[in-house]
Amino acid sequence: MYEILALLAGFAAVYSVIAGRVERSWISGPLVFVAFGLAMGPAGFGFWDSDVKGEMLSVLAEFTLALVLFTDAAGANLGVLRRTSKLPLRLLTIGLPLTIVLGYGAGWAVLRDLGVFEIALLATMLAPTDAALGKGVITNESVPASVREGLNVESGLNDGICVPILLLFLALASGEISGGGAAQRGLTLFIAAVGIGVACGAVVSIVGIALIRLAKRHDWLGTTWIRITVIGLALASFGSAQALGGSGFIASFAGGLLFGALDRSHKQELLEEAEGIGDTFALLTWVLFGAAFVPAALHDLTWPVLVYALLSLTVVRMLPVFLVILGLGASTEAKLFMGWFGPRGLASIVFAVMVSEAHLPHGPLLSTTVVVTVLLSILMHGVTANPWARSFGRRAAASS
Image 1 (cartoon, helix red, strand yellow):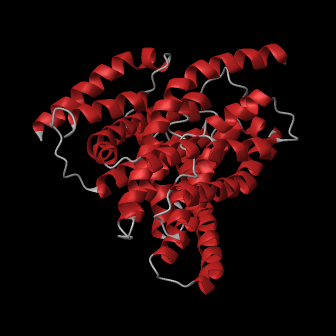
Image 2: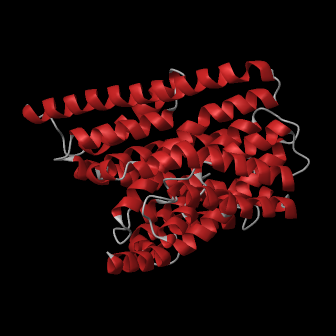
Image 3: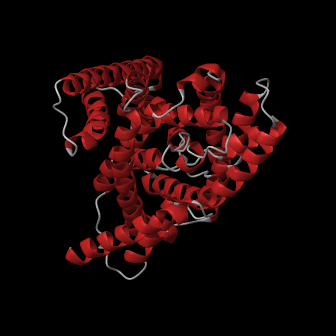
């Protein structure tokens, strides 16, 4: 245990002093973290025991995603978002369902061993994009603001929207409900996920802002404890929504949007501290992913799994995005850019852990496909993010 602690702490310390240089290069942070985890794990030097519970990764991934969603939403430019609201609305209401449908078609064509509802599960697990993996693009100011905010809102809400869809297909695949009750069950899950999520995020943020303002008036704020205020609000939004049967991911994003709208004067200093904690969580999550889950997936890798993963990251994602943006005045490069930068990550990992606990007939194949897709996403999107974002930003600025 102490060897692992020393290695993790030493790695975190070393990365912290070179992070700025890495973030400006073609190498992404998550790519470095996963590679380090792979080297630490049983496939590398063997410092990390292969007997790691999926629940540990699931909890870390959920907390990391909740923090990233809250802070990204709180830092969103609401003025730009209001002017370009059609873009994320189309991506969520048309693009997301089309992505699931295309993902189902690709699964039916390539992974013929899976059952009908298992294919639907896989398509849903890999439909949401990852706000954490896409952070390098979303925070890159050389990318047009409308594109950044559109991708930010899409990644902030699509994982929460996918939760009730996933639960419905999981219940059908495991035989908990029959096809006749699917429509009613699906509608109930969707309303609960969205409604409870938005309500919890709003309540937590309103109460949090009121307490912050009260503390400022009476000079109660401490320089140390104020640093974890945003972290507490993000996790409280997530936890309360999950406990009440809603989507914690939607709660985190909705709470962050409201927090950013209500506390514009001091939000930046509060967000900077929370983003640092979120980055630490992300480091641990990706190291654990690389150490414990990637080796098993690579061992079970087959050509159909690899083909599906590549299709999921390209045609299945890019074609729906290209189609739904038609008519909004975006350039061809903007359509391709937004379609390409739909990385798969934390939400897909959480979903894979949920599905693995159901012990479906082809559960290991589902998990392997998700892990391989996320691994390819980390590699392909990480390598292309900064170079394409910079060049796209220059061309967009020159043409405007």
